[in-house]
Image (cartoon, rainbow, N blue to C red; front, side, top):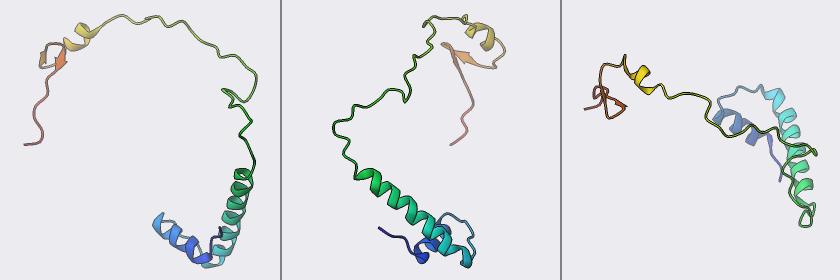
Length: 95
């Protein structure tokens, strides 16, 4: 797969990015290099490689799953103009 200058111009137009005409070949060459790298990476047989959870052998620092905040719903809803069944009531905006 190869990207031409016209395709770079079209992509730049769709992205609303201004690219000077003299830079089109540069961007096309860089995009083609990226696509070539992706093709090389896709050609590698990874069927025997196990997926890693983490790229380095490190353990996760986990904290206990415990509630640390107190329930302050009544305190927060005390200042609300309208509350019903624990929910804030707001005026209808869209008719």
